[in-house]
Amino acid sequence: MRLLIAIAFLTAAANAQQYDLVLRGGHVIDPADNVDATMDVAVAGGRIAAVQPHIADSAARKSIDVSGLYVLPGLVDLHVHVFGYEGSLVPDETSLPSGATTVVDAGGSGWRTFDEFRRTVMAHSKTRVLALLNIVGKGMVGEPYESDTNDMDPEKTAAKILANRDVIVGIKTAHFAKPGWTAIDRAVEAGRRANVPVMVDDRIFTNSGRTTKEELLVHLRPGDIHTHMYNDRQIELIDRFTGKVEPWMIEARQRGVLFDVGHGGGSFLWPVATRAVAQGFVPDTISTDLHSSSIRIQESTMPNVMSKLMLLGMSLNDVVLRSTMNPAKEIGRYPEVGTLGVGRGADIAVLEEQTGVFAFKDAWPAKKLGTKRLECVMTIRGGNIVYQREANAPSERDTTIYDVLFKHATVGGQDLDVGVAGGKVLRIGHALNASHARILVEAEGYALAAPVAEGAAADLNLLDGKRTIMTMRAGKILTDAEGLSIPDVSRAGPYSNFK
Image 1 (cartoon, rainbow, N blue to C red):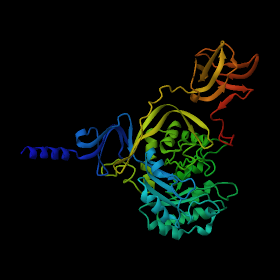
Image 2 (image 1 turned 45 degrees about the vertical axis):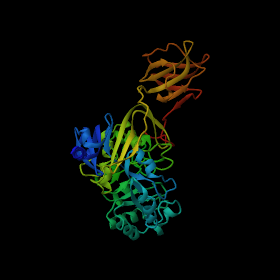
Image 3 (image 1 turned 180 degrees about the vertical axis):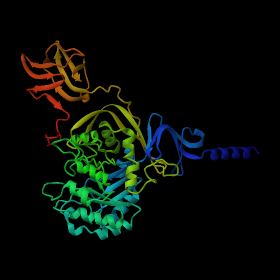
Image 4 (image 1 turned 90 degrees about the vertical axis):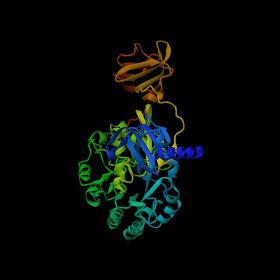
């Protein structure tokens, strides 16, 4: 009898555990369901089972406290390279640790090579790997192949897509180096035949015979996507002489052309992105163009690209929308992807918003400093934890950013650092953090002429003996005879004419 009672008790306890996993106390942001609140999220059978204010620990086989963290739908990266391209990465090693549970390979394979891609990468990845099929049959294998119009076959491209619609979500044309519209027009024709969108990475050079205006208003259809939107080679978003968004860009958006970040190693410029976001021209989708170079230098992971756009003024909710639901809709995978809706696949990204001073690099790579950064803590794919960050150091408390920092200057006979911000001397002390400065001045062996006082106007002279080698007025460096100042951002790469 006791044995029967014990078995009955254990059975009842097991039945009470209706969920496999519960994430407790996180701030859930799911734009698809208008959720922006502290909630518990329950997972059962690989799907979202509940999103509600409180779920008992006893209801789940495993419970994880994620209080203080953001719980989001698994991020959808619309532009990565995991096949064909020479800089391709392994998605499970690079995307899952950044919270991206769905990635779209942007043109690595064409109709000739897709079957190999599906067999060697898609079939073996925990990450959901989808594809934009290159209009070039051989795929993204460099020149002269990517400009070979004889290998751009709309009929065969469309046929391969229709036979693999479970994983092919669109078409990519990129790197076409010849004049004219052949690559774009054939890609659009294939897209029409297969009823899928086209993503364009085009070279708008003076010898191409192409213009951004004609491309967006004549050749592309509503729902087609132009990537690398904050570049200045693939697309002409900002007039460099007026600093304004080109009017035809706004017209193209109104007619339904979509704009994607596609950060990469060469396709995100601070002067372009800063001016565009300030004028309200924000991306429809946020993507990384992640490859072996951009992941190291520009660190173009999804959380980092999202952080850069937040630095420029976009809200967290805005960047989440453009990293989850929007890309899922563009590739026809919403609502199975891009939401934490009950019954949908349990793809979840848990992110931390860190506080400190962080350096964010653009394509050149010029640097901007910010005080907030998103970092992935945990990734869940199909209900399984596929990435979990190791214990991390606490966020930095000092968020001071200096416009100019003099290091090791002689002040009143002492070796001191002097930080300037907002036109005033903000701080005088030892070991002020050089990484917190937009402009660093290596002043060892030189003296700042008195008076130098915290709170005083930053009207300073740096002396070499009796000779003035640097002058500063109201916190701005006017002269620098010895070239001691090291700026983070002075101009946009080779372009000095951004207004």
